[in-house]
Length: 137
Image (cartoon, rainbow, N blue to C red):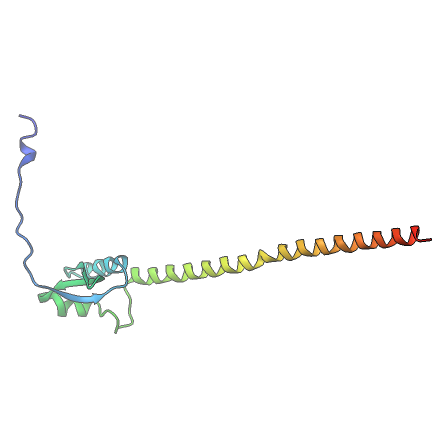
C-alpha cells in the first residue's frame, strides 16, 4: 500500500550529556554565531538561556577544549561573524547619526520660509508707507 514505508518512526536516544555554561551572549544571533564558530572547531555547542538571557552551552567533557578554540571575553579575538555583526552595529549607529543630521538640515528651509514672510511684510509696509506719502499731500 502506498505510504507504508514512510510511516516508520525511529527513536533516537536523547543526548544525556551534562551541558554547562560557556558564555553569556547579548542576543540570539550572537549566541548562534558563537555556536557555529565552536562547531567549526569540532565542539558541540547549543544556544540556551539562563535567567532570561541567551547563552552558549557546551558538554562538560568538551569545556576545556572549547576554551582553547575560543575564549569569550578575555582573548580580545572575536569570531569572524561576530566582528561583522559589530561592524553592522557601527554602520547602523553611523546611519542613525546621518539621519539625525539630515533632520537638523531640514530646519533650514523653515528658516527660509520665515525669512520670506518677513521680507513680504517689509515690502507691504514699504508700499503702505509710499501710499501714505503720496496721499498725505
